[in-house]
Length: 151
Image 1 (cartoon, helix red, strand yellow):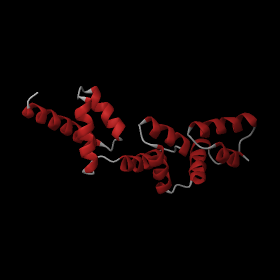
Image 2: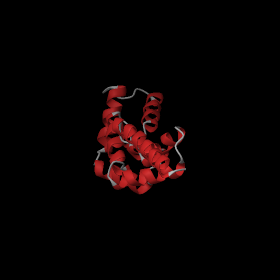
Image 3: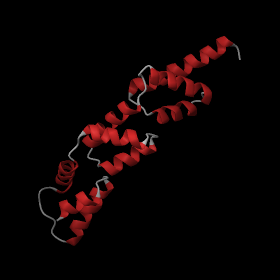
C-alpha cells in the first residue's frame, strides 16, 4: 500500500470515529467494535484510537461518567451498571472510580424507583414483597439494600 493510500485509510478511520463520538460518548472497546464491523483494519484502528485518546477525544472515564448519569436517571442500580459497563469493555478500576465520582445515594434511588413502580402503599402479602424484591434486583440493586427496603 502506498503512503498516500495508507494516509487516506487513517483519515477515513479517524473521520468515522469522530462521527460516532459526535453523536455520543463511546468506550474505546465499543468504538473499536463498531469500526471493525464497518471493515476498518485492526492495526489502523488501534493507532487511530490511541491518537484520539491522547488528544482527549476518546475517554473511557468520560464515557462512564455520562453513562452512569444516564442510567441512574432511568432508575438502574450499581450492580446493573457494573455489568453493562463491563460488557462495553470498560476496566473495573474505571468503573469503580466512575461510580464513586458520581456520589449517588443508592438507597434513595432504590426508594424512588420502588415508589414510582409500586406507589406509597405497603405490600399486602408475601407475593407482593417478592414481586418488589425481584423488580429491584432486576434493576441492579444489591440484595442488602433491597432487604433494608422490604423490612
